[in-house]
Image (cartoon, rainbow, N blue to C red):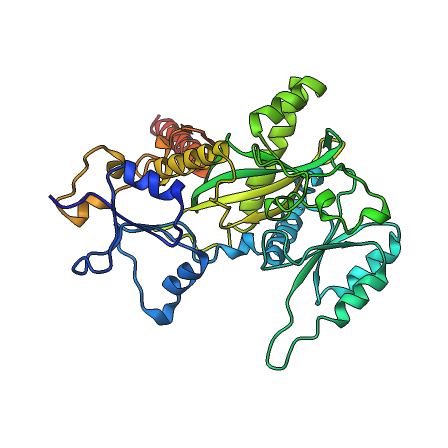
Length: 424
């Protein structure tokens, strides 16, 4: 009998392989007499090639891939800032409270905003700033500074070689009063699954974690270059002497919630998580209008958020390819579960049924569990394993439809009454 679903991946990762094999799916083989893949966990470079118009690739209704064509509108640091600034401006014009949109540190794009940055720097001369390349990850190329001369020296060394373009950077005001636990700085890695951008439909996993620095936090000038104090990236912290290989300097999200509720109260903890959800939703709305909403696509984002000493969440960045490498046993279990629940949320329902064996390609293309079902917009499950639905515009659309139908019915009744009066 033919296999049910053919899967393909650019990543040789246990968390992907295990989830696909447990479902009885067969790994795609390019030598399988022209049979095409159904599910592809691709890297961003592959996705770029697939959606380049000149390559002439057209995805079939029974194919699903893990990135939207221009996912970088949110995951490239400079474009994220650009889209968020535009969104904040438009929302403020509509009267949305400014505080609810103030979740990104003051940020400038370099080299184009250099003059504006210098002006802001001189207004606040004792402020620490953090510089990041727009297209790199794992903490590469990041440094902190508090003197303008340091930036000028850096800029002088950024002259590109002949025929090459200069690398773009973002410079942001550093959050120098982070919430500390055990005296150490940490940030959050949250997993959000977007099933559709128009209408926006997003789940947030309860299985994120906090990543801690090896060394106790200090904002003293002599520690400004100590990345074991300032950057939580595992790629950096794992090289430190104090790195704990048993737990990987990580805390499950539930442990963090319990800690915050115990110190500050459950009400404060709930309000903080509501604000964090607002950060995720608003970030996605910020790029909604520019995102190409291809029906073959979904996205698993890794949101990096830091909480300051006033329990205010700040968005640091969004990752298109959050690491699927497991640094500990607990990490492997968590990421395996996140991928499992993501597949449950985005794949067509019949793909998930044990022993599903399609007789043709038509059987492979039906609405997914969490994807848009235009005939029944209320069908999106509010919970898929660890994933909790935090925003679904189809519900808003349905509410608007009901309201519109009620208004039409009311208008029809008025017209009927008027006709009756005229007859009398």
